[in-house]
Image (cartoon, rainbow, N blue to C red; front, top):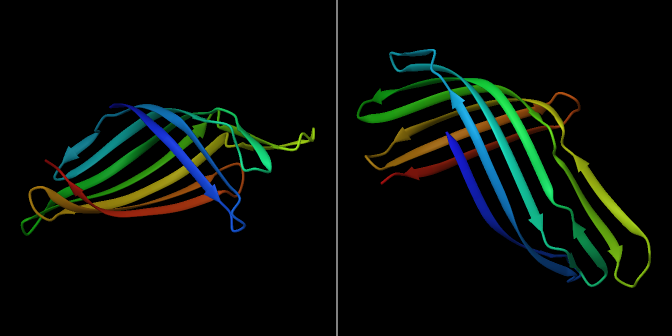
Length: 180
């Protein structure tokens, strides 16, 4: 599978003291992924998977009346490999699917920088730099159940852990999916 996606970005930030800024930008992303089922019988699938994702983001410079804010362009290049174990079938008249997907990955670029400089002409600039390079491990678990021919409920949870520090994340989603 491959994906090419573009997004127009519009941000607005406002603090409690009414200091605010607005900016616009865009983001591009492309991914290439593939897998091949080693097992595909009795509703069970076991499929090794690999994925490469490149992302680019550009935000316009702005100011909040006190500070000039410069966003450097952001790029990310990620690669991951994992294995997906899935089961699907029918309970009563409802189609279901369950999956478990452990994987490991690496971020090769992932550095962002934002510069803050006083509007009044002072020469001092403060730079905020974050680096996301490194290796991660992740586990995704999820499921869906069909409500009718075109609607299904789904849920998934994603836990990830950086191997080089204590960063970890947990996110979950629940939703309704429609097909036509």
